Image (tube, rainbow, N blue to C red):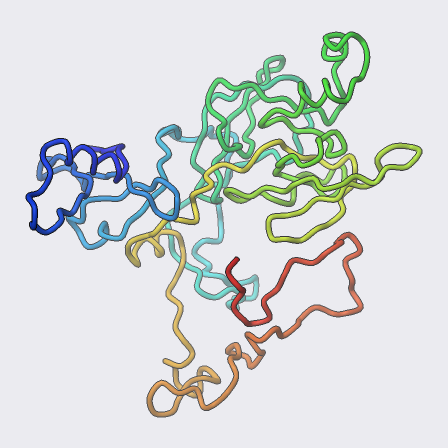
Length: 363
């Protein structure tokens, strides 16, 4: 049995039955769940973790004691659309390249997956109806199956936070439809245009997005599709627009990492925040769930032999008074730079803040 009450609700429910006697130790108020049959799984409940409602489970097994999941009861429980998926090959290669050498460590195994073909370009105009919100095993965000009203074609897009089945979304990359201009009295009023187009899930040229709006699936140039802010809970904010006599020449956005960069005026941008924002609060609960995701164990260099890692060998937990390095001797911390100073990214206005191996001050 599931319990959708928070800790505070369970506490008030217990206090109604009777307060403890004077001098007695305080009671521990935890959300109760009814005891299921012996054949059923552990019963989940909901608790707050870091300001987010997470689903926890009664620890009937060690793997469920620390298990925490986001509450996504609105997700589709069936299979994806078959023609919008591809078979994922190379999972058994365990991070090896075409020559058989391991280029990415800690990869291998995992559950069999199919790649969902997600539309990051949103070129087709006209209203689209959201049929359902689905789970995608290949990304942290959820995806939405949308159907075009005119053609009936189905595609997958990244779902925005709050998007549900039955919503209507539209792409204005091809231009503003004549029906919308007629509804505004035949004139292009910027305020009315923003009120009618800047709706959650709609895809616009970034020059049409009002200042200070939260956007995701941001492109870098026209025709290239979305490249920024595609993972769960991420978004960018339009900070300024550089205008010339011909119109908007560049748009400056601030990414969630703190980096401020320029993008093209006709680059795509979707209104809203990416779905599943509490994904980073999850706890897998046991090592086996990491193996299901295709993540193999990470062994510390101090625990290895001297022949296997620069930190290995010696007596006790000593790494030989050496600064932290990778298995190949490259410095791993203290702000070691790997980018060439000659290759400057001209699109970046302000780089993201880096801590240079030190802890950041809590604000």
